[in-house]
Length: 235
Length: 235
Image 1 (spheres, rainbow over the protein chains, first blue to last red):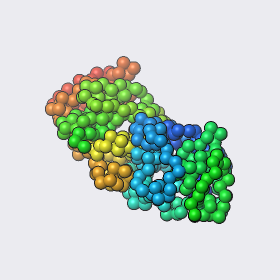
Image 2 (image 1 turned 60 degrees about the vertical axis):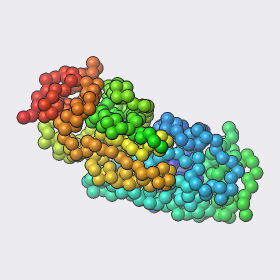
Image 3 (image 1 turned 90 degrees about the horizontal axis):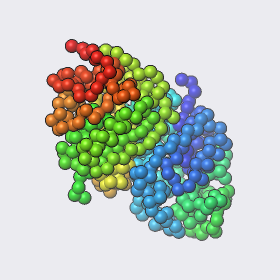
Image 4 (image 1 turned 90 degrees about the vertical axis):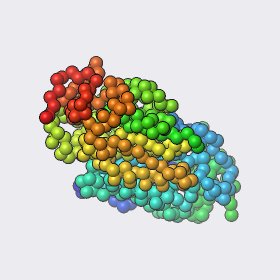
């Protein structure tokens, strides 16, 4: 087939919005895939819709899956989201915001949709630099997933190779943001906060907000989203 | 932990019911996992409930996922289920009842639940003998999945090895049935037909019915479920 289609995992956050723009820049027709999985708030989903529309995707699929039944994470309501942690604290161990097997589940739906679309490419905004503690953000995990996927599908049996693109995996947050600004990513539409206000303002104190804010600062730019607290950043 | 827990994929069919009995026979506490994924009929799910109850599982989780959004299979309503095919025809190519990435998606939920349960073992009734055409029923696929899973989770990072048991993978249908009869599997509760009547009678002519019927015959036994047609079997 002559058209190059890519399935892009799109959460509504900064990283996946950038991965979407990179896939577009590489000439792919975009098929955005978002999950409603019992998140605490729907802001992230609304962000995903707006980003997909702004970036001209061909199709946007929102799959409903209930990960609360599995449990085990702060992001699906089991524990408190930590606030005000230092970057050292964030780097020690696997955070409570880790959701068991989440990336594996998401990539599996992407694999299924790619097969139906006759697409061989999936883009995911996974990033090992900021989340050293997430096992399913490491390159060796992604490579093992790709090997498995190339044995899993009808497409693979028929000789089409499946590839997971993780263009951000080794980038620092500031590099991601610089690249995204070059590509015109509408960061004002993205949502990263684990604990936003009802009006959609970011808290400024959860791990995700602190990493994001520092990333914009390091990139020599200013985060266009609204925060409800003054964010204290490290030197 | 001293208790050995296993997550068992349970569809309501003959194979997974046998895999459940094998896991129990090996001394595991059983956690059955079933998916409601837009199947044509709910008979299979009712069968899963009855089997899980009869086999004394500790917990039974039914996860709702909508694979119709992905499409691409006869089992989720896109094509007609074929009838009256010979065993030669069944063995040629990948059948329309193949659902893209289905086993990969199912195993990914099993992996997530296993992690929460602190279980290292997942049982799946996949079988390569009858369904040569399903890429995700082959041993090399299962092994690649296991390697990926051992890089995916917090448990694996902490040193616990994850294992996918596929005790039926090389067995003929008749061997599965013989083993299941030894273990007291309640085959009268299982449902295999792709196209049952409203009263729950099996059609007798779809690939799944034909393989099942022949399996009981080869095992020197009689299938205890009800069929609506006289099933013609090959010599």
